[in-house]
Amino acid sequence: MVDVLSPLARARAFCETFGLRLPILMAPMAGACPASLAIAVANAGGLGGCGALVMKPEAIRAWAAEVRAQTNGNFQINLWIPDPAPQRDPTHEARVREFLGQWGPPVGPEAGDVLPVDFAAQCEAVLDVGPAIVSSIMGVYPRSIVGRMKDKGIRWFANATTVAEAREAVAAGADVVVAQGMEAGGHRGSFEAERPDTAVVGLFALLPAVVDAVGDRVPVVATGGIADARGIAAALVLGASAVQIGTGLLRTPEAKIPTAWADAIGKSQPEDTTPTRAFSGRLGRSIATAYVKAANAPGAPKPAPYPVQRGLSQAMRDAAAKANDIDRMQAWAGQSARLATTEPAADLVTRLWSEAQALLTMGSSQHS
Ligand SMILES: Cc1cc2nc3c(=O)[nH]c(=O)nc-3n(C[C@H](O)[C@H](O)[C@H](O)COP(=O)(O)O)c2cc1C
Image (cartoon, rainbow, N blue to C red; front, side, top):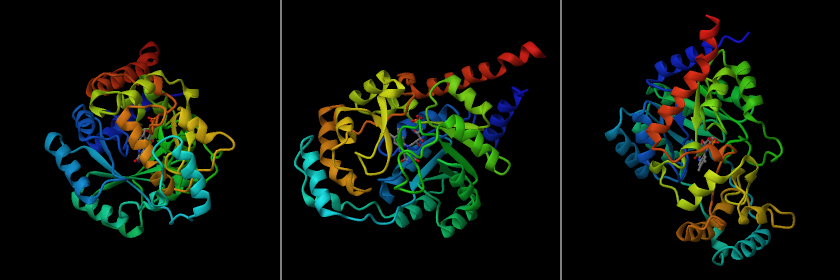
């Protein structure tokens, strides 16, 4: 029989280790993690998050300074581990540009030349800022960076989408594994960029498998499709020590996302979201908007690799954000989108944890 008290004990131990009052992490969300959201979550006792993918060193420092000034400093900074440089194909890119031109402004050939922010410079900025927690997605940090993080007492939370990735992360020195199910909104953190879109694992299968594989060495955080107390309680029963919530926080006032996106999140059933490479070239889960459906349809040109596709789709995405047009917007969302509420973020995480605790203790009082 499952011991219903052990999930709570596990969550409390995690909170104690990381100085939290509740085991809820704000997902690091590149482009959707304003300091205001991290401040609200951290002050409620959870962990704030910064998805620093597109942030230059100055922006990383400024974000951390703002959050530190208004909280106890409980936040994670997240970086993408870079993929090898993409293979360019100008003939195919021309087809993609033509397709995108039907959805937004004309796209010139130079649009695909976008370069990611210098990863080494981002790592230096993060080490300099010295947050309590640094996280990774799409791979593991180089050994030298891991060594320097450890020297500074920074803990490393590594996102993993398979058991093999979880094992690789722990072998590389990760202190916590974040098991990301395929329900998750936004980019899927496969270590392999071209991993087939069919090779995806749902959280109900992934989480206990990761816990069985590495849970004796490191705590496991669950993420993907968790947006209410039932999801939190289920994740803890399946072996997680905490949960990480992305989409579930995006409708809060502190998230400050375009209203068309926030409204669409509230109306999306699980089947209304879909994995797509159409925004960036990397697989991510989005609301199945008109553009995403057209780009995913047979006959549409295959998206260019990351980050080329991100550059090619930039003009359309910018125009859509300006016009608050959901059909062309980069509208990432996880499968539990409809559960997201518009409460202030601090009220939301406080309520979710109190309801999850009630669910986890419900049976125990009857049997004691
Ligand atoms: C808008 C958005 C941006 C995201 N950006 C990042 C990112 O930069 N780094 C990262 O590790 N995960 C990123 N994610 C994934 C989240 O960390 C997390 O895995 C996901 O939100 C969990 O699923 P949920 O949205 O159903 O809660 C992003 C998710 C969203 C919704």
